[in-house]
Amino acid sequence: MFMNAVGVPDDVNTLVHEAGHCFHDFATHALPYTWMRKTGHEAAELASMSMELLAMPYLVQPDGYYTRDEARIAWLEHLEDVLGALVHIASVDAFQAWIYTDPAGADRDARDAKWLQIRAEFEQGVNWDGLEQERTARWYRQLHIFELPFYYIEYGIAQLGALQVFRNAVQDAGNAVTMYKQFLALGGTRTLPELYAAAGAKLVFDAATMKELVEFTMERIDALRAGADAPFTGIIPR
Image 1 (cartoon, rainbow, N blue to C red):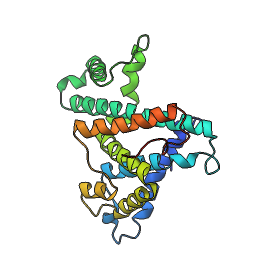
Image 2: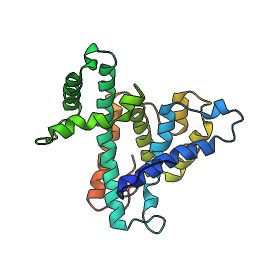
Image 3: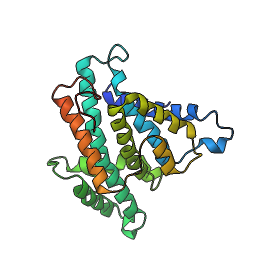
């Protein structure tokens, strides 16, 4: 794995995320042909984003190195970031759709203005007074826009799948992990819907299911804020 680390909880999330890709590769080794082992980004990111959530209970001592209080803060921060990421992913995807199809995308000032317009649409209720330059510059650091055109919505598709895997784990962690491992071992030998189904999830594009998953995540966030000592406890399974 290749990553940066600056001593914050997000470093741990990055490590676990990339480990999900590694386990995905390891799980496909039994497949006879190289071409059977590779998946599209939507499936690859499901592996990594699910790993982030499934690993959360093991980040606390004695298995991990967080104290109980540190772990609760890290879990809370991570779940909040998951919801914030959906907003950012939608913004980047809409911005890329514009910048690569509209001639105005060639103009520097037009790019900044369009980014702010899109951001205001998806990110509502956040006060950026005094930080206008920082808000504009957020798209500059998204390397996908410069290096991998149109590659970013896959993270949103996968994140919604990972939340379903997480919800399954809250209800029955052992079964959720078993299905997750079955999904990993399939590599690219099934269609994308079939791969998601193997993981216990489905492709989500409708507002109703997205709302349901966001509400589930908010329940976990509220439970942690109220003092729950683990992300998989303190809630009645649906």
